[in-house]
Length: 247
Image (cartoon, rainbow, N blue to C red):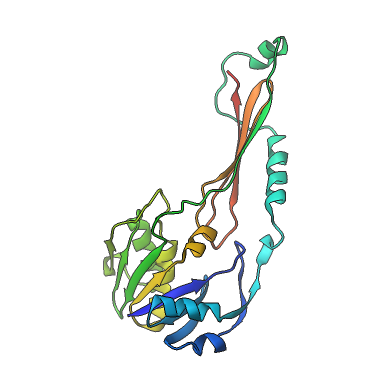
């Protein structure tokens, strides 16, 4: 059994440009340092040792198209979307005409930030990829998705991939398959069973966050735009603007 941690690009959509593992491999107990699709993995004889090796890594990132994206840029994007017509979810009567003669009108703007699921137990997965089969031990809420992803990475038929579901340590909809894919890819690359552990910092930074939302209550409509969470390998995707009559 090898114990692994990952170093991922701090920017969604980014990738490894180059890395130097010399100092990491000099840490006693570090066995291997490899690059996979989502970053650089450090494997060692314990999780703590792997984390120590990761601290010694030297990585240059290609931060991709989102390198300069920040909170203000996202806020501006949402404000622009709110100024455009949206999908009408429901319409009863003629609210615009009724409110035009109202003695009092109320306008308000509400914003809710991206929120991490922050499960008590950070993400983790143990994978054992053999020559003709794959077994995974994982706290997941999405067994079918995890099995499909493992089959895709290994090239095995679904029947050759077995998922063992452990206790979740908190789920809240976060326990998907992204960390399963990492563990399977690492195990396949090194030809040994691997236990991958995310740190608390990993979990907060690379979570599938609860969507950011902005809602406006003008005199005649409630309008809301949200941004759905994106996977670590791609930027978050804007969702449509919806208009609700202010009944």
